[in-house]
Image (cartoon, rainbow, N blue to C red):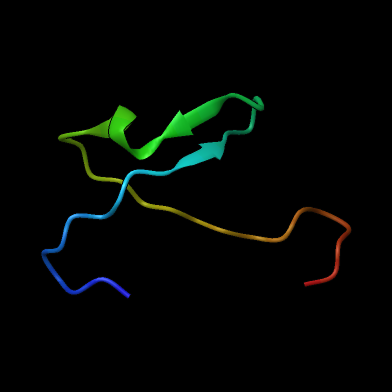
Length: 43
């Protein structure tokens, strides 16, 4: 868990088009991450 004001480490994720996107691609912007289970999967 990061403390308030701590910079998050850079990481990569796949977007909805299966392209790799890194946190550093959004430097200087506000970022909201939303995680949810893939359709028709338990969880």
